[in-house]
Length: 118
Ligand SMILES: Cc1cc2nc3c(=O)[nH]c(=O)nc-3n(C[C@H](O)[C@H](O)[C@H](O)COP(=O)(O)O)c2cc1C
Image 1 (cartoon, rainbow, N blue to C red):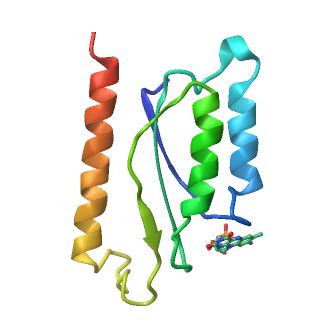
Image 2 (cartoon, rainbow, N blue to C red):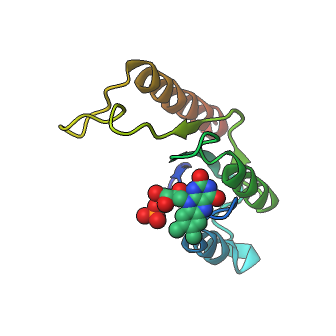
């Protein structure tokens, strides 16, 4: 059990990869055991293209909202800039992006806190 899930995905043919779609489907049935209902979902993704998985994420947003998930508002589309974005040590070299992603994580944590407060 978890209160929130952060999905990081590539974009496939302006949608999501089949393997991710399969995971969403399996989690959604039978309806009484739908794992997505009332679950906080944050999403992001990176691609080489300029729109950074925007269309794929819109699709994922739609699918999960229908399942009753609480999809975090906001947009986190990342254009992967090789080789400047990630250093040889595997760490992110782009400070602005690094701060942006940290803020995204903090926003998700805050939303999960609000949705699980009793
Ligand atoms: C079948 C397929 C469809 C793709 N469609 C898109 C797309 O619509 N938009 C995009 O930005 N990149 C697209 N890509 C490029 C992926 O974003 C890129 O290959 C990514 O690194 C996927 O990693 P993976 O193939 O190792 O899972 C596609 C790649 C594949 C294999």
